[in-house]
Length: 409
Image 1 (cartoon, rainbow, N blue to C red):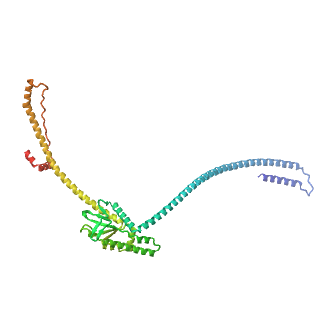
Image 2: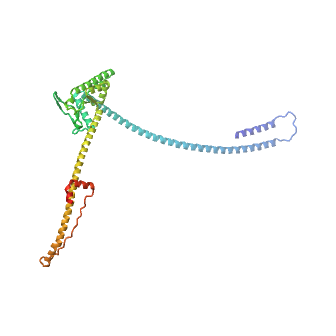
Image 3: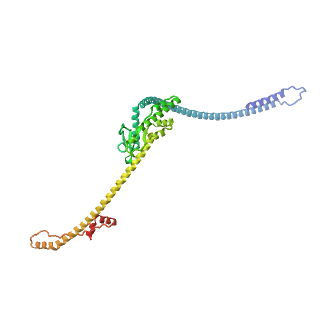
């Protein structure tokens, strides 16, 4: 704005000078000399305009200074705010860095623990593999398989509650004309009946099937596994355990216990007619699960048998108690009658003493033969015994002791 005013003043001055200094073609007319007046007026205008220009410039400068100070203040405030934000951000970054370092340390510790656990797991898996290999090797030995099957059979019996000294006998030898038969277990049933069980562990072919690398080889071993199961059934049926007991003492079925559930299911899968084949030969194939269910049923039968026996004992005890209570009532009534008789005898003796003995004693004392404390007569007593009032007890007492009623009459 100041620059524009200065340019306008200079243009006005230049125009005035041009008018004054321009040459004239015609003869000058005598006119009054206005140059000094114009020059003075121009000077005053220029001076006034310069003064206004300076004042306007000063006001503009003050406004610019105020605006600059306000802008500077705003910028300083923004700078302070940015510094605070930067400081807060730096603090958060520092805290985040500390947390990250802490998490990194924790992760390092966790990784170390994980590596340690993996190493331990590797050792455990190695030990497990070696133990599994040892178990497989042991289960391929017939004697070891037999002992394992007997142990599993005993465990199932214990779980079912059939203890050795109450409901079952293990390793009982049966003597026959052809020699001795030794079943793995003989289970006693109520009313003197029983049945036997043998443990069979066909695992050779089953283990080979588990280790087979192709399906065809596995199917071949599974078929051999089913044939081994059939052979065990035929061998158990040929022993004819039922013929060693009296008729009615043993069911027609003999239990063939296979202690490995997968092995039994695999045999059924390979030979669907295996179960019917066993039943035709009076052999019942059972696994640990089905054997425990069968033994629980047997234990329930024994429990019912014990309840019946205990009920009979309770009935006998109740009859004996009733008979003895009847006899006790008769004796109790005799005691009451005896007490009444004794009371009457006592009253009679007191009356005799007062009427006959005491007068004579007083006569002796009056003669001075026996000086001392004066004799005081005893107080007479009267005893009333409560009779049995309940009619059922009264009738029972009279039935037990008929002579007592005659004596009372």
